[in-house]
Length: 220
Image 1 (tube, one colour):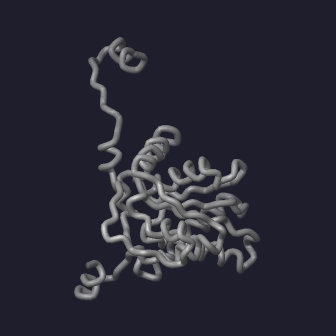
Image 2 (image 1 turned 180 degrees about the vertical axis):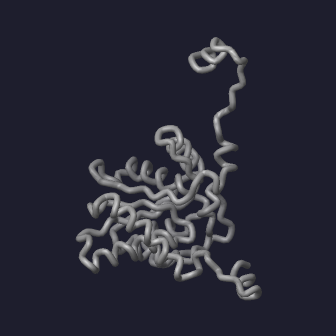
Image 3 (image 1 turned 90 degrees about the horizontal axis):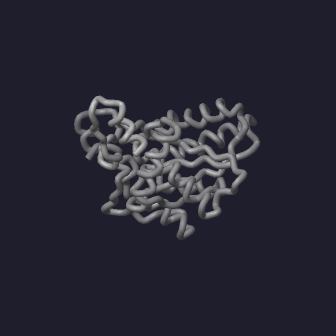
């Protein structure tokens, strides 16, 4: 529909169909390397929906390798929601192509995509870097979203939290070694998709304007 509307109304389509988009998305890898002083991490974990981000990061690391700025390639690891996981399923089947899913469903709306534009490119990026792909449940996504807020003060949308949920799962599976240096990319702010965190928040406590009432709630 977006493509049809763009053609009909002569609009500039800026979603993942646009080949220029990954060129801009490469900048996240350049920022990461700048912050790490070009000490390449062992693994970079990203949420995967339309898959442009993981492809862009792959392009960026290959370009840095080509010009001699890095001498090592991080393992690119793509995390999908269990209910929208064509790339992860293809990886599990060890294939280079994926089967589209007609009715993807997940709380993580930004990665609720059954036929990713850059799905094949994502698989290439994962295979070529010795990376990995797996899925996380909606419950795992929400738990990671809450943990980021409570422990780090970072508010992210559910799709972003998928990378952190995936890191936890892969560590438990033994895919991630204890001594690996891992970067999780979180792609969107809480305000991009606030409903899931509102709907899954802990209950709000109401109390009197009294110190003893506050203590009772906080301390029991």
